[in-house]
Image (cartoon, helix red, strand yellow):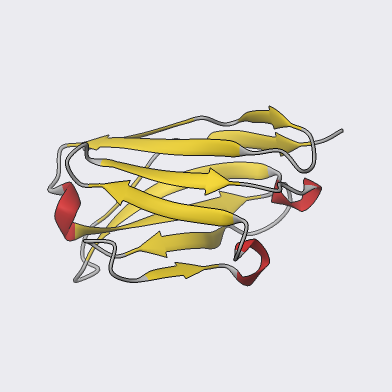
Length: 117
């Protein structure tokens, strides 16, 4: 099983980034896809989640309206479009796949997002 995040980097406040999570080794379409982030000195928090066929999406309150999670089941890839970035969005962003039963969970290695002027 592999989850590989990409698209992180340094961006000024108000800017945008698009994170990708390319996966392999499991049946992507049957897994819930999630993006988490962890800022220095803080606990990891769930940023966004999309169910198996994109029917239900939830967001952390602080990113709602600025971030968009999506998935392409044909490409086994999940995305996180981040707009109007703020300094408090800085952190390592992790992609996670969870089976609907919750019995299996996989994680990527993370990608750094830094929002700074």
